[in-house]
Image (cartoon, rainbow, N blue to C red):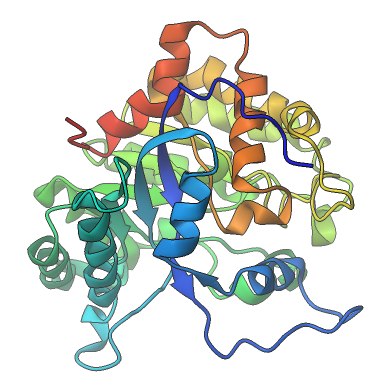
Length: 345
């Protein structure tokens, strides 16, 4: 039974979702030995405008969204380094559709975070300029460094070179972002947070958004150790918060990698359980960064492994029920609008 929508008038800017069409993905047989991330993606192989609108119109007052890179609709032809520009072209078209007003007042993909390979060094300029030419909604890039020695942690996403953010080759390209006033979304795993801290200290003029509270782990060799590692995570979060150019997205805790009891549970966990499980991570980030530098995110459709879109935002509202109106204004919309420079008038 669907939950009643809490605080339905509260304005929301969802700063992190994806769009994709995983064509040709075979169905997963019951009992098949596959990574849980693969099982989640199989639940929603198509997530395009129709599916996004169904979520955005499920009861909460979502005013706008930010699309974040996921490797969708890359160009099939042309120079390899420019293929990710196809994603921005695709998403800008989706944004234009909702900006027409035909689909109501929501402005989906009002900001776009794409991808450019920082290992290109100064040659990344060509790619950044191509993104900016394609869309005035382009706000920055995401170049994940997520990696772990245990391949069972990331499963199909175990494809990055360890220590990427520490390499001189990566930093040569990363250094070019400030020239264009672009931000950097960082997705990495909790044990890798010191790598991001070092990167941010070296480049204080580049705005950084930490995705998914730094992705605490409860899968593979970390199974049963998430709470044990909470103190290490907390200290790294506090260190990051001391760096004023960093903001943090509060979410992603419904992912397979975190492996909370609510993940893939039957029946699905209610918002109260989700708020209780995620609460220590959310509260730690808010205490460290303050609401002015924190933003709730959906991370859909990835986070549907634990709940639907409406329940996810209910969980954040349950968690934030004792926060002030000003705090909620920042956490649910204001920080996202400021960080991604969204014009919502």
